[in-house]
Structures are given as C-alpha cells and as structure tokens.
Length: 367
Ligand SMILES: O=c1[nH]cnc2c1ncn2[C@H]1C[C@H](O)[C@@H](CO)O1
Ligand SMILES: [Zn+2]
Image 1 (cartoon, rainbow, N blue to C red):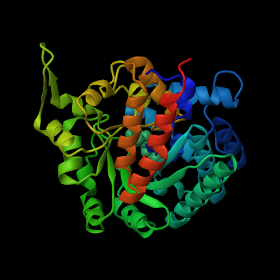
Image 2: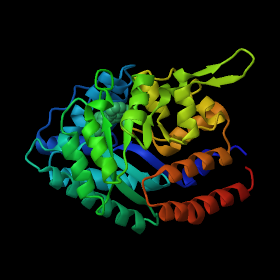
Image 3: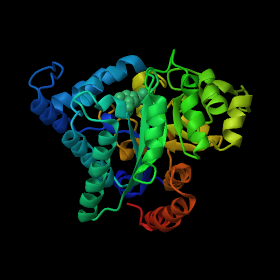
Image 4: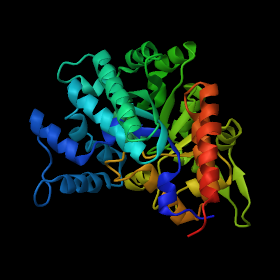
C-alpha cells in the first residue's frame, strides 16, 4: 500500500544520524548571528530566513564532502554560548517531534563549541538542557519524543580520547554514544584507535562516519580495527557488491560480513546526493541494499544543509522506489533495533509505539 505524504508525516519515525549543527532553523541562524556579530555569507538579494536557507542548500549542493562541510562555519559560529546552544537544541527537538520523530540520537562535536570560553562539560550540559526543554515543549504540543546525545570527535583533530571520556562521563545523563565525523579522505578512523579501544573497555557504544567520501578501506577499518557498532552512511559498501548481467548478486567478504553481522547502515540519501556519494535518489544504493536485506536505516544527516526532514527523506524513497507502509515500518524498526538505548527500552518502543501506529495507518481507508 503506497502511503500518502500525510501518512508519512504522521507515521512514527526513528532518527539515528542527525547533526545538531546541521539542523538549525535559518531564522535562528539569522537571529543568533545578529546577537553575536557573526558575519553571515553574502546571499543573492536581501538576507532573510528564506534566502539564507537557500544559500545553505546551494552551497552544500557541491558534489564534494569538503565543500559541503565549509557551510558549518556559519552554524558552529553562532553556537558558542550556552544560551545559543540550548536554544538550538530545544528547537531541534521541537522540529523533530513536529515531523513525527519519536526517537532520535542527535550528534555534534563539543570541541567545536568552546571558542568563546565554554568548557566541554558546559557544552554538553547546554545541549542536554535544550533537549529537555524541547521534550517538554513537544509534550505540551501533544507529541512524545525521546532523544539522546551522540558526542562526535572531529577526525582531523586530536581530541577523540578526551571526547570519548566526556561521553562516558555523561552516559547516565543523556549521552547515548560516540562518533567521529569530518573530512574522510586522509583521516582514517584508525587515527583514533585509542579512543575506540577505551570505549570498548567501558562497554560503551559508538558509530563511525565511514564509506561516504571514501570507500571500502574506511569501512573495513571502522569495523575490523575500531569495532564500530554502526556505520555513518556506509553507502560505499556497494563497491563490494557485484550485480551480474543475469541479475544474480555476489557479495565480497566485507559486504557479506556487514550483512551477516547485521551492522546498521545509517543511510542519509539527500546528503549523499549533495556530496556526490550518490547521483540521485533513484540511483542511491539504498534500493539494492534494502532488497538484499542489509540492516538499512533512513536518516537526515543535516536538515538545514539538505533542506530535508525525516518525512522528506522517506517520501523521496516512496516516490523513487514505490515503497509502501510496510517498507517504511521496516526502516523504522531497523533503526529502533539499532539504537543505543537499552534493549528493553528499544523493544518497548517497537511494540508499544511503532508497530501499533503502522498497523493503524494500514487500516486507514485508501483515498
Ligand atoms: O555527512 C557528514 N560527513 C562527515 N562529517 C559531517 C557530515 N555531516 C556533518 N559533518 C561534520 C560537520 C559538523 O560540524 C560535525 C559535527 O556535527 O560533523
Ligand atoms: Zn553525518
């Protein structure tokens, strides 16, 4: 059954890969830049929330991860005080809840928010405060959402051990896991091996951006050297899959391992189109990977830069691949199973929230 856009909007959604500094409202960027005197980029015509939002989308639509990442100067630049960070975190949760997201893990790099003198600990506290305000505001608006923080270390920098320790220190106060992000080529995840080994000794969870702008060696290192629980993007796993002329499919050893071990792929279709990792949504490897029953999840990555939302990502897949409600439920249950929440809580969200809601949507009369 093909869903309507309104049904996709109302369906419960789970988001594992969303950057806090990639999801600001354009209006908030404008206001915060005015408050702190941050110089925003020159846009065509008058500088308004609309023209600024368009600037982000155009600049990010670059075909290169490096140029895509340059746009973050203008979001990170206005997120240097506790009040600004708290506001962005609160609005993030409100926006996700309004989009029908019921569970989200939201990431950012604390080390990028200390330019005006905040300590790493104060940054995490400011985000947590904003998340709690956002959950409360969503509840007042009749929406139930649960959120956790993922602390990211920048792969070109050298603070991963410190950030890993910060994540573990906050594990019972809102931080669900750890990640590394930033330019991939030239910065292999093994540079941060000490941090990953520390996290494993602590029985903590982490995901690694890998297989986005760089291919199989990056994925292989993330899994086999670093021990990643999930792959951020992981889209280049497709390079280890051969589709023969007769339609038969052959998996290389790494692709087979990823599928056999049910390693979750945090796929972000529109982000990949912008950075050139996929030519279009219709040609995105997610279609084949889903058919082959990899543990695929659907995510937004950067809602501001991609002008996207969970509804928009899923709806684009419905349009490109003809997915129905059962397919969307499969992505959602995959994501919930792959979250860094304790098992019993994941299980409860699947059986008490996700499954009943999708069953009810399927019961709705066709338009
Ligand atoms: O898709 C991405 N790949 C690698 N790095 C990314 C991506 N999206 C955002 N980032 C970076 C830029 C942000 O400032 C940082 C922390 O959220 O993570
Ligand atoms: Zn990302």
